[in-house]
Image (cartoon, rainbow, N blue to C red; front, side):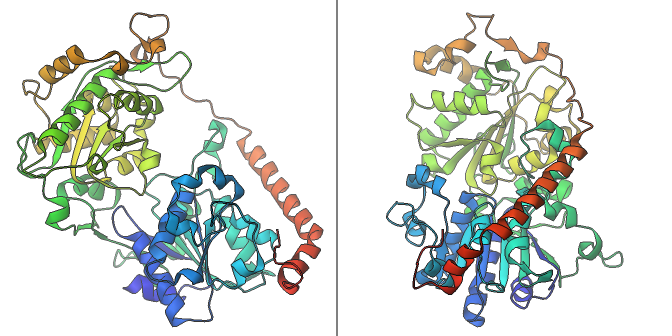
Length: 517
């Protein structure tokens, strides 16, 4: 593959090489293959891999264990990870500083006797403090760079890939700028550079722009992966056309993506998407700004019961084959509480952010908002792109088309479903009878939280009655950003002048002290 060859050969050096990986195109597999080739073909070169989250770092570590010997990999965790050590795979823990499920400080041998080091972007700062020898790492990979703040991506680049104003390591930025970007905790930062990733800033500009003559990227500096091995053509088509200029090619095998075709519940049995129109009520807790929708929860449960009880086209399914996505945290919590009674603990329910980088054979989406002209953050096109590209073979969306249609991208998607006859008709069994039956059989444990019960109208509020207010723009955002940058520079200077002895202990005197930090 050209991308692997160019990464290994450092074809873009000293500029970063970009691996543009849309959904399901095998970005993680490509990275693992490139690192494996570096290990085998360049035995004197060392690699640092940094990711935006522990989940992404662990996923890449698992892939690397298949192409690189265990004793050549070191997964460096922060001390805070001890609180969730039970969530990590044993295979990853065995090659980490949490081996034995006890945190161990970073030692000389961990770095200098491992040719591949994997950590998060934040934890890479500890390597900066450890004063790793200049030019020790020849390659620095940043995975999921599209969801990282640029200042976070600079931690391994400025601290490890450069020395004395010189770029000393080949930098590889991997991710998809069309999917979710950095998480911004404060509204005033959404209008600053904090809301944009380095990958998003570089893509389609300057060195990384498409050729005006050919419309193609320069493969010496950037590769866009185009073959989607995840989803059925119909599931991929809308996002492909809307977000990727129809450049992606559906390559998933029929065994993976085609088994739902012909299912009797599909409005169009040759089209594995169901859009289920439903007008419920968007409810809100008095102590939360999030939303939940009981009627949509009923409908989601109807589909799950049918799939688990009857299967699809003679195929049986486990709970782990089904994923449920809702953009609202309160709906996620509501569904989890409703799933306790039927004992559906293995059905994963999560937000769009939690599902980025994930996939399931069956995805069911609850959009929640109804009876309002405002769609809230459902209007985020990157969130929509992630939502619509998680399913392999069957995607079911439950929502209010009148509300969703107020957003131009949702309107186009609903039109796409309507043109392909994927909308459920109100007279079909999947609508009113199933909901009525569920409500009659509903047990107390399945009721919504007490503070949201209909008997207490002073607690529950209809979202439709609350006019949406635009978020005010903070004109001081730029000044705050400059102050933060100044403070960061001062901290780095202070650190560089206060730790000379640590450098000596870690690098030049390993026999006297094995541990540097």
